[in-house]
Length: 381
Image 1 (spheres, rainbow, N blue to C red):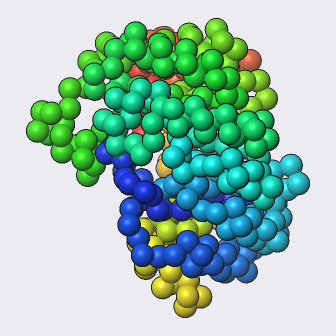
Image 2: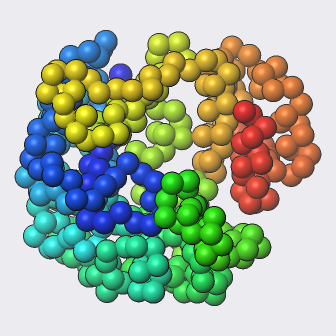
Image 3: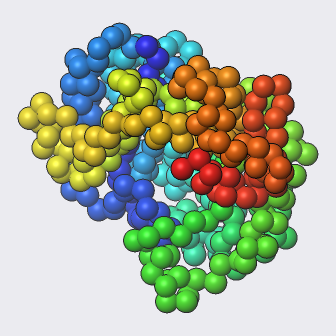
């Protein structure tokens, strides 16, 4: 069976002020020891798989995976190939932060087998970068992109954040123009979300985080789609745009409920069987994770078998994120009942409200539905 792979590297130079991912700065754990533990976890998991696997994608996320040295990344790629049948044409992505990269390191990643770079630019404004708590400057972001090209990367994605306090639609349009001038193959453009437990959440509660109003946020979202489409990017997911042929294969599998095994502290996994699927995550603590693996024990927690209604809801609120939409015929094949039987009147109401449309056997969000996507998703919960 096809199983994509994810490796979580939870260490950072400094945690960003908006980040609620499982990441930390200042750990005493040596990267070599952590990499060795991840390899051991991969061995333990491979022993327990009910069938042989083939991995079409491998994704290094974090944290800041680009704090790893190329030889450490190579060791993990070799383990993935040996234990999980990493395909010859697999998409192998590493997230990287400007400020942690050199031409030599990037060339080392490329030689190790990484063929896709996800560069955490976030903003081309030094003022915005300081406000977000990033460790790099705008100049370093541009230099890192140029170095990646020089190292041979022909598939580069960049991440940007809009709706940051103090940002205007005009300022965001200039950010997008700068991104287009760079010419990456992929652009992820996310609205800033204030997550509980982050420094930004505390500032918001204290009234010290003047976010753009809803109208400005919608304007930035719409400008993103219009400007990037005009520049030749496909809008294929709510916040993601790609040159033709460069959609993120790994991220698409999440929205399509594909099999994925996660390794490392805090990594999430999903398998479509048994029954309607099962989700779990590893221990968040790197120390607890290493201790478990050293005892030849998988550090999985929150093991959650999905009920039928859970899987049905995921089919819609994940699948509708993709602008290609979802196929009611596929829903019927998976669950043995029609959409109308599972959700009486819901689809008809969404069509009447102009939030979704049908085309060539698929149901997908309209332009208005994209603006109000969460209101669509909640109908299936």
